[in-house]
Image 1 (cartoon, rainbow, N blue to C red):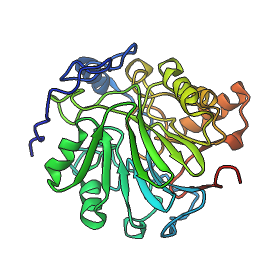
Image 2 (image 1 turned 120 degrees about the vertical axis):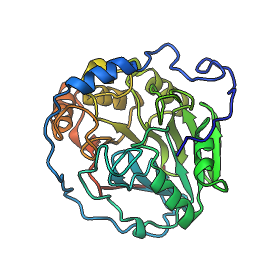
Image 3 (image 1 turned 90 degrees about the horizontal axis):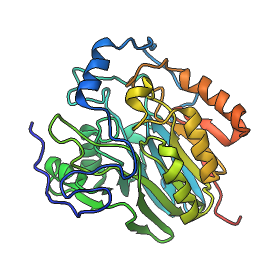
Image 4 (image 1 turned 30 degrees about the vertical axis):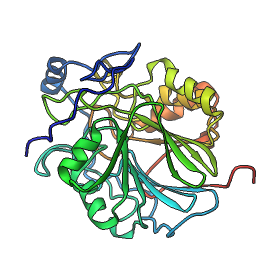
Amino acid sequence: MPLPRLTSPHPVSDHCDGRRFFNPAGLPPAGLKAIWDWRRHADPAPWPERFASPYPQDRPPARVTDGLRLTHIGHSGNLLQTAGLNLLVDPQYSERCSPSQRFGPKRHAEPGVAFEHLPPIDVVLISHSHYDHMDRATLTRLHDVHRPRFVAPLGVDAILRGWRHEARAEAYDWHETVALGDGLAVMLWPAHHWSARGAFDRCRTLWASFALETPAGFVFHAGDTGFNAGRDYAAAREAFGPAALAVLPIGAYEPRAIMKPQHQEPDEAVRGALLLEAALTVGVHWGYFQLTDEAIDDPLRRLALALETHGLAPARFVAARPGLVVELPAAGT
């Protein structure tokens, strides 16, 4: 099925020329030839068929009114419950992250919450258009069952409406704030990444992280990003204060020559947590889909070394597995 035609031009800015987006003062993604050469000669570490989580599948409550509850679904997907609302960020329930369920990276663990056990979903936040973060089968099923608001970066709304024309899809630029409910808002924050769903739509839609103002305090959900000297983390700390919770990617980083502009590795994630002054960080984007060359548990080893190197207590940076539940009290309690 062809991709829906994207509306253009987009507003011209420091990260958009009117038709395509880019990383200001950053690195462009690897070119198609470099990616093709890597794929032809790649020697990825073997992954087990299943990487079972130590946590049982969660049965979340219908609503959380005090504080915040996070359940890790898998990869970058998380359920956030706070202020009486239920939010999903980058949910992925398919067996593969690919244009087809016949090929492409398959998941190596069960989702941390079964789809049928999700509470009523009010809002879905989508960080960008890559298949491991924006899964058509998952999002159309969520639309059909829950009728949520979809909040996404510029251009992504057109893709959603191409799948379900009546979808409540909203698109925003970096630094735009979206009110979600009483005491709950999200600002789309810069990330160092790129976008595409095919060979001819590269960087035609925007990518973003999410800065959430919640009853539990400032929550930063990075989505997918390269480290970019920590600029976006430092700016978020200056704008919002120390983070009560940060959700940062720690996987899919080898080979560095290809992945550095778009995927940070664990040492960079720890440095990002320190720049955010995060009270607690949850590491995601690992152990679910084999997208790159490192071993399935390599992020764990590198994270342990990075925590020791930077003097950050392991209790303050947890590598997520599906079914992990984190609960934060309301700020000031």
